[in-house]
Image (cartoon, rainbow, N blue to C red; front, side, top):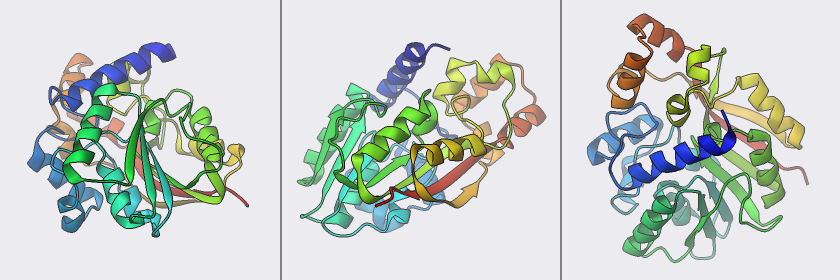
Length: 275
């Protein structure tokens, strides 16, 4: 698939999500349903207090982990969030870094940026800003971030090496990367691997875990550590309208779908830019 075709498809799909017109990439019934998004977020590790600390509409249930919980953010730190969506993780990070800290969310979907900015005004977040841009070309100066976070976004980008090079450039020496993402334990069937709809669904954009870790190491990161990994539950996937349509399109049986699901791994990963 050509990169521009993938980007166009991802941008359009997430634009619809921002307008509450579509289900999301995560295996949920509808990321636009407030109660469902809350339930999914709790399963991913977000606390009740965190969920209540953000403006209504910021949590779309799009993630596959909780990078903020892993980040050990300190007051006064500078945070960059890749694929910030409606601002959920940015607002949580803003509460942790305080008035002296700064959080910048980057997203390539104009509708998401608009929604995030509305949420920031709604919650009166003075230390958060949102910038339109692609995470392969971050609109952020060199050596400025203490930490870069991302939640289930890098798997959607064709050129992952370019993303990690940009993260490395953006971080201060000694800065850290804390991300949640989707990787593969084994290769997907070709018909899924080559599907744009599966790409938007966070499936075919994922690469093998060993390859993913190798890219990060080759960019120059050190102390690379997978903090946690898990596979999604089949029951959640089976309830997702997007997944149901995909299974019907490719005439997948429940067992075939389960086999594909066993290939998918959600990881929480940390790495350090050396001093």
